[in-house]
Length: 126
Image (cartoon, rainbow, N blue to C red; front, side, top):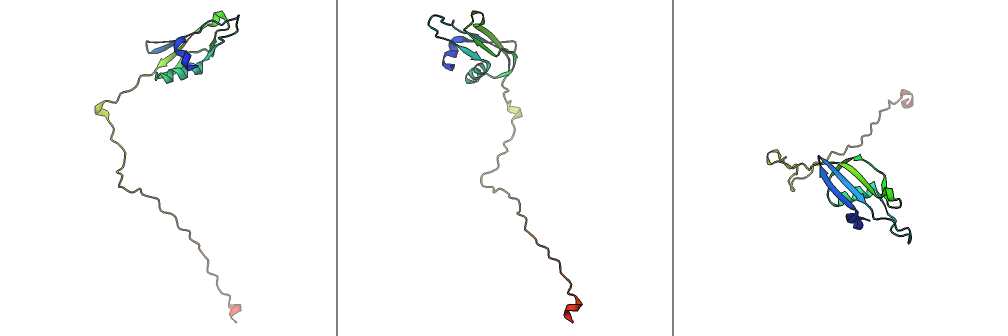
């Protein structure tokens, strides 16, 4: 479905929000062809495929379908997430260890068996 999505979807950025408008072509009631349904999950996967970072869905609809003429168009509104760019001043040092340094392993605990000494009874010695 993503192949055809670019024909039906319009994406606009405004005031920190992403407006996604889906306009489906009309359903052909004579030949019973071109029956379409686009879900919110289809919209999200399409945006991720286009590498558009989105946040929470502000205006939500479960789906849009073209079988009813009043239901051919829908608008979803998402929060826009801005990518943070690392400034040169705030670069963190790499925590990688040198390759030649061996990893320190925990010592394996030794199994210790404690045996109690039994006193020999004097009756056995007699």
